[in-house]
Image (cartoon, rainbow, N blue to C red; front, side, top):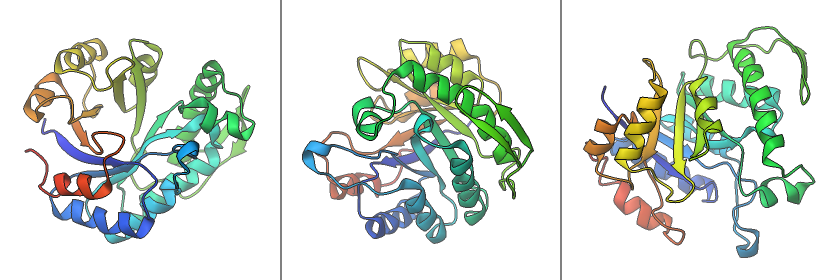
Amino acid sequence: MVMRFGVNLPNGHPPAELVRFAVEVEQSGWDGFFLWDHVQLDPDRREPTYDPWVQLGAIGAHTERLRLGTMVTPVPRRRPWKLAKEIVTLDHLTGGRAVLGVGLGVPQATEYGAFGEPVEPKVHAARLDEALPVLDRLLRGEPVDHEGEHYRVSAQLLPAAVQRPRPPIWVAATLPARAGVRRAARWDGIVPQSRDTGSLTPEALAALVAELDPGPGFDVVTSLAAAPADELADAGATWAIDGPRHREETLAETRARILAGPPR
């Protein structure tokens, strides 16, 4: 399988500037363009944030080939039906290029607590696990009759997404905990990271892939900062993602590296 290459950026850059950059990213040979999904980045630094789905819609209107999505959306702070409409709209706008990355959302204090939402990870995990099957059926355009602990839905949202059976769902997993790995195995891909080191080494990635034993079409998404691209591909990665290498890296610095093209 040929590994694909993507760019992942904070959702704090000016939207028009980001659209121009995404066009350049596509022209430089990259395969995907992804955005973080934070309500706040760093309140103490008074950093701006923008809605990633609105930004991705604008990017989709100016690109032709890039896969577009979030990496990742904290589903527990969203209404699944509203999120489904955003994804379906992006999928139609782009002719079937949408990807949904999902996770619990951190840091809990700024993503949840600042807005009166529960901050307990167990609550977030329960919401995510309940929301994903609902999202799955809503994206397919199927009737949903669901009454659970956190969500109640009796609706069929049309149209369905362009992609069949629906846009892929990639699940973030923080190791060494296994809950995220088990969750990802039920869907279309995994975005793994280490709690201690951030990016996984090729050896750790290979062990994870062996544990998952994924079937065809399952994506393993990792960071280009972890190792040379050929080592990541040999370990089982299907996507290698680049972006800011450190907290203070500017968009201009990221741009200079990205526009050299992916390391094929």
